[in-house]
Length: 404
Image 1 (cartoon, rainbow, N blue to C red):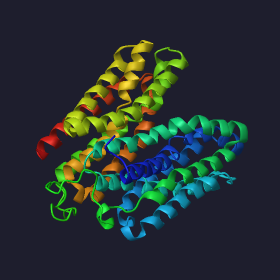
Image 2 (image 1 turned 45 degrees about the vertical axis):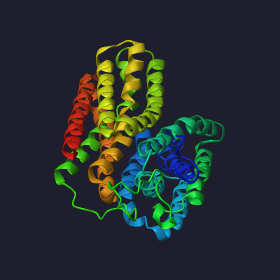
Image 3 (image 1 turned 30 degrees about the horizontal axis):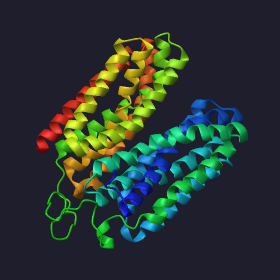
């Protein structure tokens, strides 16, 4: 981290703000508003929670559209427009009188979040950082969880004192503040347009850039087999991240106190954020393949602990280890995409690979609930998680083996 300074540190802060807004304040605090809206409108919480489903689906579509919208000459305007849309639609939610209008506004802020979120942020980091790129990626990605952890109690307090409408207005204001560093300090999508070079640029290196100009190589054909494996990896890794929201229910199924489930979720979220930073540091030091394999083994171990050892202390350990799945589903997907297809193909492949993960998370959130309804326990679910993570371990070996 000491090597990241000056303009590069400002870019890192700018990208952290965009992720905190587009994911942390759109997705990770959404549940705080459900009860108040359901009570005032006299509708089911499931009906209200559909706002988040719609938001996440359109978020993925925004990510697909991002490469076509992200052009150097209109970067500043895109940042301002995207911020206006995501913050403005959030503020307008405070004025809604029916759920249908909320669905529309959540689609708007989901699309804006998708454009300003993972795709744009990782493209900028890959362009501006040649050294410490994994660490920079992981720091930025961790801000989605950190924003949720930091602002959840604050927004909850605002809702408690002023109502959910005031909560939305407060959230919209925070979104604008968090996006300001990107609007003010992000000079370009690529440093070459400002006659600069990426952090740690080596003119002798010919991995992704030419030695003479530093320009990214022309896009080449994407191997279909590797692309399919990457999509499956994203689907499995992001699908696994649907389990932690069921931790309170898992603790209850083992006849444990509600406080145990709450603590499991808290520990999981801490490991979610910290694990991303550690994964990036490990990848820079030991390589992506070794780091991803280590995390896969730890998450499989976490699922096994949750399945086999039913004591509070063990459940905390299992929840913490399983929290590393968030790293596999975010930083891991970015690393695999970049390592496998190169920067020249990143903007073409990452949005599609990421889309598979978004769909998987939404799908498995419901599938896990249905599996519990059918069996009355989480045994089959935890076994499924072990199989999924085991399959991803095989994919890591296969993808990086073919790359070598």
